[in-house]
Length: 450
Ligand code: SF4
Image 1 (cartoon, rainbow, N blue to C red):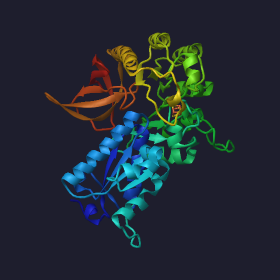
Image 2: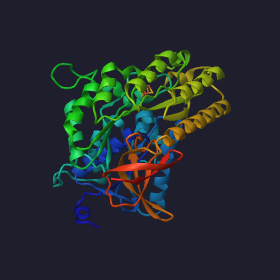
Image 3: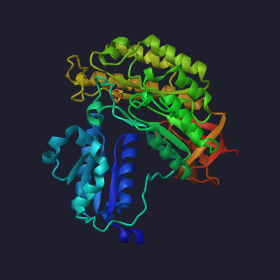
Image 4: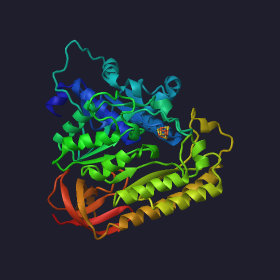
């Protein structure tokens, strides 16, 4: 047990469910608690309190979050010792009033917009007296490894008719440039080699901020400004969660002409058919989307494109489903996430009458997943024979010993597969030159050549 532990007010155990945005929120709470004199517990048996940061994007994610909380409660009650559980994030934001009665195992519920007050909640549960404050340095982020997600906005104003996020996360709000820049510069100075910019709708960053002054006013300018801050340090900038409308001429030019910004784009279109998109409360048509992707591939050589297909939206006909499959195939997306539609109150589509029967939805989902895999495996195999820079993410045990695992610029961390390398002398965060010799599924095999 470290000296810091004995001096700490207590040790906090964290579980994070859901997407990278939740990882960032947990990291923020962890930083606040560390700065307030708490330590992290890596096992619940050593914890004084546990925080479960939940996801409620889909009904299945809500169930998973509740199951994780209940199994933690059982673990605590069944073994080790009593620790209060704090449930944070999207489940309390979505179901706040119902939860205290439904989940008596949980000591406190903290909505996403209340997470900055986590220290007060934990102090209250552990009976900490703040009249003698902890003498510990401020901790801003607690990223380990070569990649850090940086939130540039939160909330969403689009109200897609299938999505509960605007009801959970609230209205769209951009983070000011100064805050983003400071966080990026700090992370890079601590050894981070890839910054992944995230938000519910990154393409409209800045639209709600004052347009006066000399700083960046939109995402394209933000990327260029951040690239200037990190230039010469071998840092990659990646942006996820763009909407098709966000792909302006200025943004396409910024991606093409700024060396630090990766030629990788994540545009979750959900569907290609105009009729389905309109019912989803989304704009665009198959032709407009096709033109956009053709233009991206034409103007940015080697562009990698990831998208999402929401399968079985209410009223989706067999013909519309087949058109979406044909569209995926024709565009040749590198990576596609496939989700079956699920009814998410209070989003409007949950009350639409022409819901697709579950077995039909599952059949369509399987067909879409099969195609997504075929596209992804082929896109991965195309890199065999190439050389590229790979960021080292860690070491994994194999049957024969150990291997290094990393990712290339065309693989978004945690989403798109990895690169497996012989164990050579290298540290997490190193960028090495690799020749790809083989592939399997979404994975590449290679050897370090420099
Ligand atoms: S853009 Fe649509 S799908 Fe994405 S968070 Fe906003 S409402 Fe949900």
